[in-house]
Image 1 (cartoon, rainbow, N blue to C red):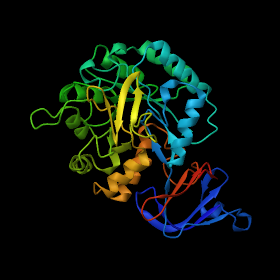
Image 2: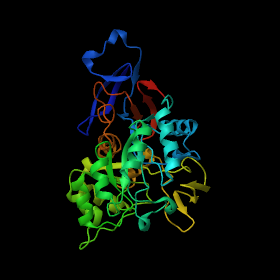
Image 3: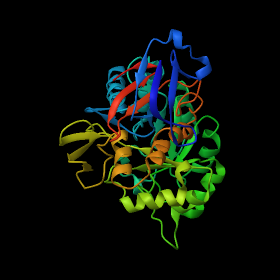
Image 4: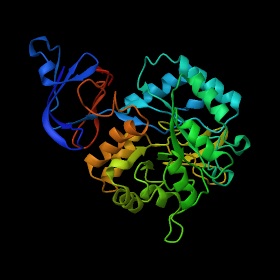
Length: 376
């Protein structure tokens, strides 16, 4: 297959007018492509050709939650995400009992990955978090960090846990980071930690920050907190929710100046109401009320978003003034790098999976390809 005359997103983070080649399920070089054997030529004149988006932090959509933990639910999520240009997913679990998490991760291991977006990993959000900054997590199941529990869950998942979240100030956190980093990436999350503790966590092996600004201490001139530590420690990625609700546009623009486009990962943090009308839903066993683009617990606490990653990227570009090239980089390449799957996806380079998203000049979907096959 050849995508002809498109504005192709390059690994350097720019757009270049050129053709893109696909052989089988993978991106190919021009030299590997035989015009005589080409089964399809797709004219994408005036369109953007970008890698399929990768959402590394969200909970659900279409009235199902990843923690429902069944193959059918995983497929519903994967198919909706693919229809929205997200070709690879790393959904997040919630703070639940050990038995509940074991059941979810066992299903992850057994999931055939045959439909829709590729399940490339899982983000284990909780239960090793601060009660004071639990947000929409269920405080009933918050507990001290346990390497033994995590290792068991990682084994059950088939090593699919690509991120595990932790509040570095809780008991056993530093020891947990030192051990868990051997098999996954560590993210600071739902925390009361100040600058010093956060910096120590990075030095011990943390390399990620969950939904920056949300469920953590603020960033001020005398107490820079997690945000200040992350800005200073250049070896970490930070997640940013650009749904127009969680973070003010000015803060988004300032974050790009502070961290640079190479360290930001756009996420949706979307929950089961995504793709559904206003009403009552659930997150982590708690009632959520959705009105417009806001999802809140009964006490007014934000409970994730109802905006998929493509819409978040569009909002960042159209409403927040983020350059398209930067937004695409943060929703594709950076996401893949942050969870360790960049060797197979996240950019349009030869030998990587042909996960391709075609957008028109207004950033609307024209086509979605997963492993070289047209999905939409």
